[in-house]
Length: 402
Image (cartoon, rainbow, N blue to C red; front, side, top):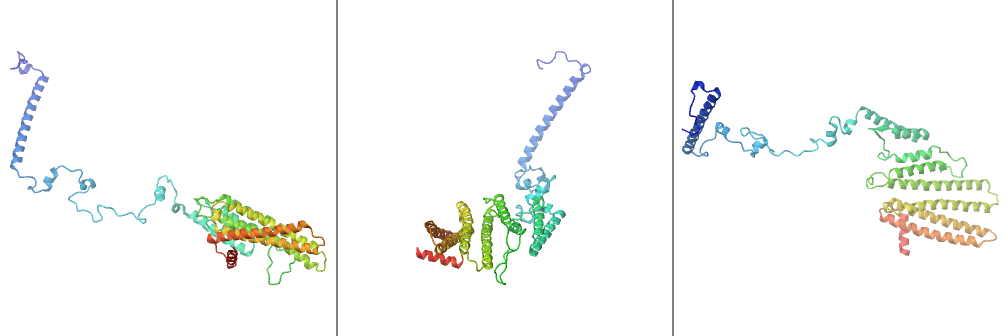
């Protein structure tokens, strides 16, 4: 008997319900503990008397009680061991090719709302109609140009530039139509020369372009050069490196056309007044025309010299070859001016010293321009330009002399 037991124990009927419940719980716990101890002893006895696990055949019932290895590949893959394995290339997936792969643009377009409208989605009926409209405008443009209807062709060109496909305007650079704009600006006010010319019946009459048409065409190329400069990002597209040769070609054509028109006027006057004795006045007019053509050609050469200083224009075969040909043109103009001054001095009674100095200066400038032209032609040939046979012979003779 414990010292803490009460001296007087009331009978069962006088004890409270809570005390009786506590006593019942203590008895139940004591019985459960005794049952657990007996189960442990029975399991140890069976383990000592049973064979090792390797000798026991594995069945579905015994495998069910084994713990699961969470690092097992079947468990990780979620594949049952009782099911057959998939065919090869299991467990490796095949490579994703372009046929069965979805592009990033299509994935973005499939979102709700879409973050990007791909070309396939934008190629709807409206875009198809706009492309057909662009094709019709292009056909109309070329038909008007072939018929010589330049005003209507210019209107078709304006409509083509204002047409948008997929929210973007038609890019004339990518379609090779950028040169048509300058041609239309030149020929919108074209007129045949009204003066009779001493040309043969088989020779064609060259149309006379107004100065305003040439200026409009040159301004058009200037805007293209500023709008599409040559940058590392646009070096593989149509840019200023493509527009500059066309710009200088049309400028050269303008100067030569103006000079040819002046010479035609002089020839017409000489043919109308063959018996006139005003030879000195005619010669002075010829010298003035040569000087004016020389000044205009020098403006082109100065502009090209400023451009060829910086890359990538300094290595352009087309620009180098064009600058070399302009140098030969300047040399011919200097030589023609010198010869015309010499004929004038021989016919005049009193030859001045200033005219002889001017002839000597023109002769020196002609040699200098010729030397510079050969240098540019050599650079153009080294850059890969297709040099004609006559220019090759000139370069070889200059090398032999050097």
